[in-house]
Length: 244
Ligand SMILES: NC(=O)c1ccc[n+]([C@@H]2O[C@H](COP(=O)([O-])OP(=O)(O)OC[C@H]3O[C@@H](n4cnc5c(N)ncnc54)[C@H](OP(=O)(O)O)[C@@H]3O)[C@@H](O)[C@H]2O)c1
Figure 1: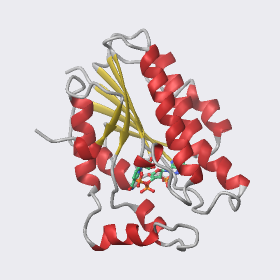
Figure 2: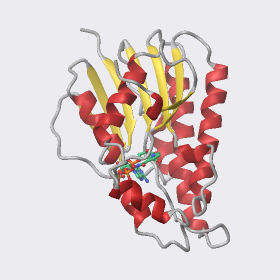
Figure 3: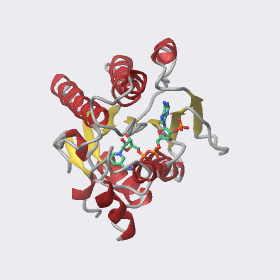
């Protein structure tokens, strides 16, 4: 059986962990997972790499050796790792936190997308790059200056990559997962209303059971990646995906 390859960032919790669990159930996919920490999972299909995507020097030094070159049927990169960052109004943001946020949310996925295209451009495998976006990429939210900006920039980078690589073998997505029950939402609910005027709205999402489960988001993400002929646009929102 010819295997596929999944390269996934941010696999240790939240949406990324659910995506990992989804693909670990399949036998025909080799998974390369990158986060700062590692999970206590033994699987011959899983290789975990401990890497801080906020440290671009280290990422850069490891890029060349990161992409396996076996004969894969399909190769998928999911840039999922992300950080909400400091939730504060512009004018009160710390430069170090901004730099880290731009590294994790924008530059690391840009580096990985660029290196992925370089590594696999000439292989005949079907290639899919899915950059996890957010509704915040197209909507300003007070307190999320760094987050909205990094997600918007990554969406544009994905659109440019798609325009440059129109061959049948390449597919690009900028995929917004909706509002999902993860640590990121927990972090958001712990900030002050002065820093985040929409705080009550986000608390209500949880109280009223409106947060999507990570499992459903993972299933819908996989459905998009497994049916690229049904999802022709680069910009996608998980909330619009109807499972068959
Ligand atoms: N949750 C939502 O409602 C929501 C809404 C829209 C978009 N999103 C997007 O969905 C993606 C996943 O979010 P989530 O809510 O699942 O987040 P999460 O629960 O906070 O998980 C983040 C994941 O990214 C990894 N990560 C964070 N910083 C990293 C770093 N410096 N280097 C390497 N890995 C790092 C974490 O692993 P380690 O700690 O082990 O490094 C973890 O596995 C993000 O891109 C987020 O912006 C989420």
